[in-house]
Length: 327
Image 1: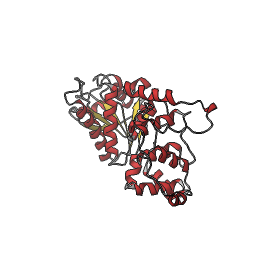
Image 2: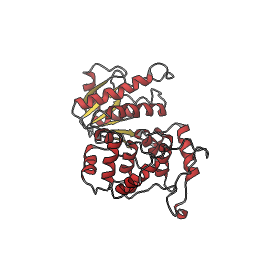
Image 3: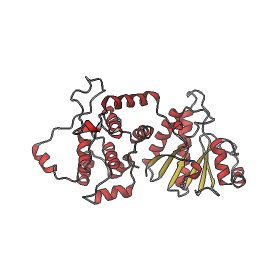
Image 4: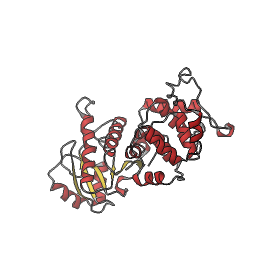
């Protein structure tokens, strides 16, 4: 399933299909479009495109990939930015949905996208990124597919200035040098009074008998129980955690399976656990949350805000050069 954000040259990504941010006539253009034609074989790809008769904004068409390390090139035409009040977001989302639909129709198991419309068409990069994450995430809740969102450099991928500043401020306020940290830090009981935003919902009171019964649960056992308690399906859980079905199956079937921290944290996010519950689940896998690690602080920031959208959390982790959740 998962959505993976990577820095690379799109023409070198090994996926079943790569997506070209094309022009309406499907002719070789400049920038990334020109690079795709050059890498595929300009004349061969141009001949394929001429046979299609063009493509309208928000739609997608497909050709062979020729010399590229892919089976197909999916061509989609993004909207030109006109201020945001002329249906640009819907048209851009349609580009992703149409492209993904073609990929599935042609049996692709992986597809790689650029940040469509964020170049010569002028779509602001933070807004284009939000549309991409939302459209891809919604599609992946219904389909099994690996999707790469490929950015060529760090400057091409930015959070909104306010969100970046909020996260950076949170890190600055809570970071503790690990040389002086004897144990994982906990949040103050009255966090809202301290100006840190609304506190996470407290865990429901547990009876002593239940606590003693749960003490020896492994990560796998606790996970299965939490899924049932939350009224979730297992498919919904692994999709919301941005992990694939095979990995989830290993975790579920092996009572002693030890997941990576990013995987364990992703499952906590998928189940919308509060901080206490997240720390408990991570502890079953041998991990904790520390104020000496940016990854942990960013995770806590989003939990405290009540934002459990794993794709948005991964946007932030990527922008701060941290490992991504799930994938």
